[in-house]
Length: 285
Image (cartoon, rainbow, N blue to C red; front, side):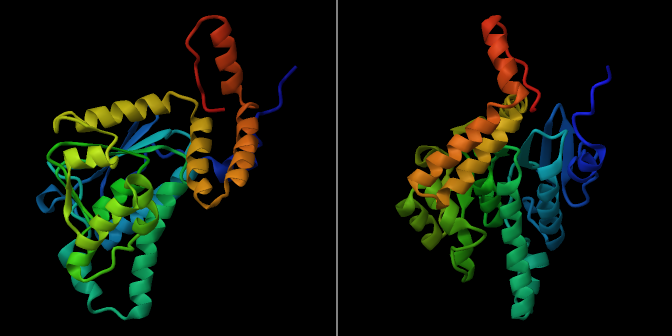
């Protein structure tokens, strides 16, 4: 007897995308084995962002919500730096000539990048070396995990250019990573956070040698891609949504989320593998 298809083709058409062959225009994109790597690729300028790269990153992370062949993402910078923030000549210069509606269009676009990063189910690992400033620091902050180097310098330097530290979710996310007092210091002063200090403060999960940070970030992402990716996506969703919940709401939401995970084939496969004293094979379903 023929089994009915697991997913209606019409439903799949609207909700399944395959991005391994995506052709990026404003940064480098590679995908293999379930791990995609985004490389900000302007090393001669310390990999700054432009209007174009902001928009493409926002749209790509939005599409990752529906990607079937990308299970984890690495974000890195080319050369010896992560990202120097918004390009002074291509972003900062034009901004001083814009009116309020266009300025709000820009700030909403940059915030939408962070929202898309937090909304995609794939864990994001940032490989941070060298300069990680302004919007670059935000991209690292919005990732799920950060591997750094001793020579990395992370600076939320918005007040250095006459702006508030409340940029792209910094006042919401950064205190949750390193604490209110430490976040306040960085956002009020704009000073650089060194790699070792960043690890002590909890901004970095761990430090790596500069020549190894990308490889270790990729290895971490690969281990996540080989895990129960549906369940990992639920974990990411709950980590984000529970910021706005009471404890009672969070416990109930987690009860419902875990019950859904218990209906997956990954959960069943893990049980049978345990009984057979084998390593479970996760397929994300």
